[in-house]
Amino acid sequence: MNKKLFFATVALLVAVGTTACTSTYLIRGAGGTTCATVVRNLNESGQYRNVYNAWLSGYLTRYNYDRERKLGSGFEDQALIDTALIYCRQNPLANFDKAAEYVIQQLETKS
Image 1 (spheres, one colour):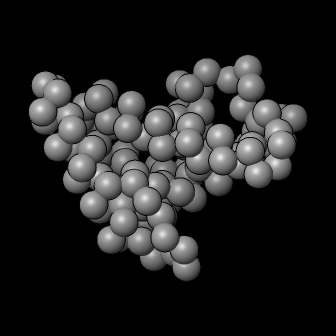
Image 2 (cartoon, helix red, strand yellow):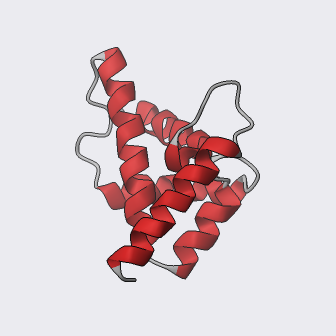
């Protein structure tokens, strides 16, 4: 995927993420994408992994900042996104932010 197409894809995900939300709070970026779309996108192109991984990393960073924690330390990005995908495959109608919450729950059980 060339850079122009990649950035156009990111812009589309941001637009979808901020308008398709069903939450009571605003979800910016890829977190507002439905899990069904996340799974489909990741099956189509590995470039999407960077987009979702970046969003998930930011979500986890904020979670840690708010709680003065280091949750996720020692885990590779691949393992975190794979955990989010487990949730998304089981909950295709949920938004990706719920998959991020699931990742945090799983990390909490391991800490």
